[in-house]
Image (cartoon, rainbow, N blue to C red; front, side, top):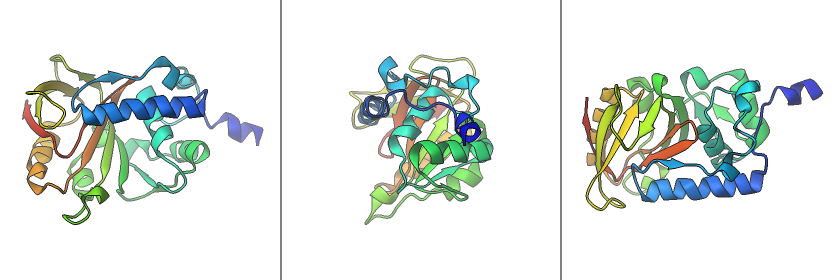
Length: 214
């Protein structure tokens, strides 16, 4: 048992406070699409040095997000490189969540694993129950409100944005953003997107209009 616990890897140092702080940041990210928000130090205490532990290949922000949102009643799909025995055990140990083999309402991926097969498997909900649409959580290579070499430059408009907001995202293919732009025509159906990089998050809700370059 001791050896098993040692392999689980780090979680929040203070689970209640860490989850509260992370949830507040995620709410703000959803209400201000494209805003890149650092998670406060108090929110990620216990996760900063998790790279030295045997744990899933998650950055601090993505790990904090999953610890905050998942529980025993919320299954999750780990796509591609995240779908490992250690990742499933880590989530099960810290959150009680079961990992499902198919895309579900909570789907998590590394940017390199987000392809047409994955995004077309995501459920956008229905006109009568748009809230049933999936949320896709992606750990990207870089994330900034300023231009980034090699990143896709996005122009966001809509609720929570006064005029427009620039967002640069590295790692997700341009085809993903073209799919995301086309999907907006299906509103109120759609997919909410949460991006994580290091200890920062940004969100692109389904209602946000996205123009991409690159």
